[in-house]
Length: 126
Image 1 (cartoon, rainbow, N blue to C red):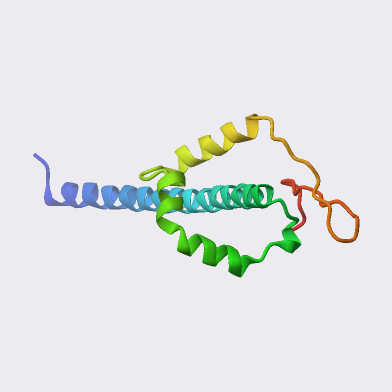
Image 2: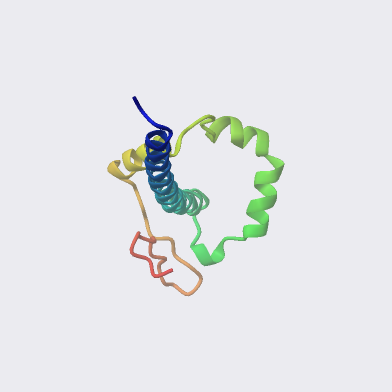
């Protein structure tokens, strides 16, 4: 017949196992947060490139305050057209990866000094 001591030992073993599982869970949550931050940055960068391409200007010529104002004034329309509500980070990353597979037309945009703007790449130094 099992004794109280036997049950207490089992409880302690299970508490130790639970602590290990909680530590693993915390580590996984940390990795997921880091991964999502990276993916968010990649999507944000891609969206910025799309804005520059659509506007037809170099990055240094973009008026961010004017862009913010435009987006605020057209928020409902923009949201209806562009937002994928309920999307998971994995879905967003898959859409980004699929987008990278498509050939993209990029033409250099001439600035006032006669130089051409170079499209940013993932190897940008910022």
